[in-house]
Image (cartoon, rainbow, N blue to C red; front, side, top):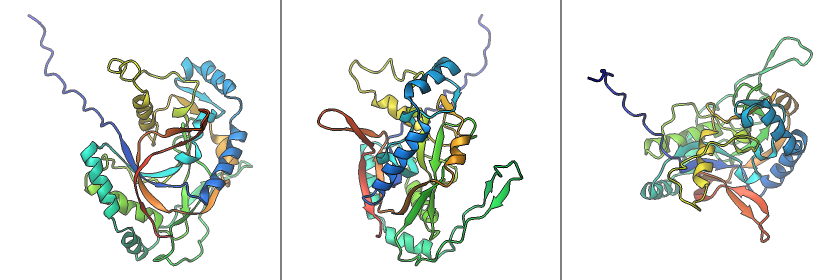
Length: 317
């Protein structure tokens, strides 16, 4: 007689495969030159030769698994075309995608902006500032922004400074948070998120919306051991896009699990007042495909990476 092992645990529910996301793209004709110049400057300062970065990762242990290194691999720095603020992620089949596109294009974004304009502006939270000389940490409140017509002015943001998604001593994601002088951006995005969530288009996520433009994500870096994905199911010659999208999905947010970490304390201090772009007029809300697509020239050289916008709706400008 076999031993009674008791009732079996039900199999863990598989997470849905992410296919799309709702976002505010940050790349516009006027912001692109600023962002290109800023990212180039940043890359020159924080990313030494990638072979050295990979060697440090290997030395730190197991191809970068759990490694913490002081430098940033250039592949970790997001391309200009990929900069955006995510409002929510989606797992959509063909029919559900069609519904989401139709719903986006039917939205009265002008009405949403007027609604949030009639409410008190969301104040920016005070930030802690460490005294470089070793003195006490001080509380700094943001400077009162200039007055704007909150009912009619376009959504305009600045991207300044850099922050860590995790403990700065051991992080995989660095980002810049958009600054909105009118105080409408966050309430507007929360209203958009709620509408798409109520319609069942967004994957359930109870975390508070944190608007951020990812600048560094080590999930894209070399010098780390990649875990094979779907190796049993993938056919010979099948694109590796599924694996890349799975990497991208798990590499975002506070619970990101990128195997390669960086000590970003020096970078954060150096770039705390760095201007990535100013007076960026947000011109659209978009539904994008998960997984940035590589753009090449006629000779096959990589020139950019961009997310495919399957639908968009213009914002007042």
